[in-house]
Image 1 (cartoon, rainbow, N blue to C red):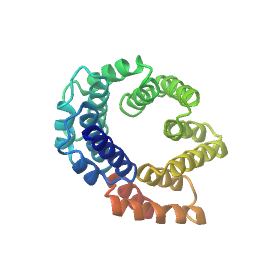
Image 2 (tube, rainbow, N blue to C red):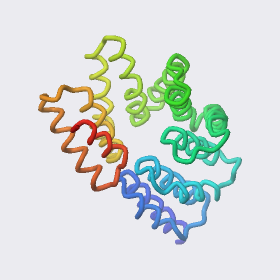
Image 3 (tube, helix red, strand yellow):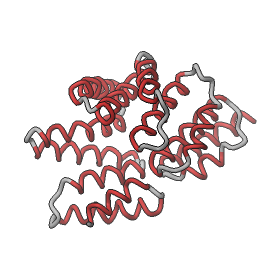
Length: 240
């Protein structure tokens, strides 16, 4: 009975995570001590930090509570290091190396290969500013998403590849990629990621485009409700 109850809690926590209700999701797991529960709680608290740019201590503590040599710990440690660099939230010496080493480790495992390749690409793209090297990793991630039928991974990779199409002159294809990214996230019901996709597509549309106004309205509602810090900031810039 205990195992059944634990799995019920894990399922509920995952559903709340999808909805962006990270506080309640983490609270459900507060007393759970199984490896799966601890890893899920660390992922939830990291994701809350990623979208709110707040709560880094809780995320770091939850990740530190994992087996440091486990796949999930290595990947989350890498993602935390990347996010510190990306948002300049008290970055630590060696964060770049920590992130790269963690992504290399996770990319070698079939369970996390595709996602690790994507994150590795984002590190090279957004921190090292090496677009050519980043694209090679994005391409591997997109291939993995296709092979595994992982539509969320596909949606996230497409968002990053879309800019290259737009900057390369194929604006129509770039917008198609951004729209597919948004539709895939909407189908999965991942509310924080949907709001982010709405912001990014709106930013590429003209100010008088009715679609832009609809996207901004929807994204603002989710950003306010869920406390999505950088989505809210992006919306404010669009309105300026």
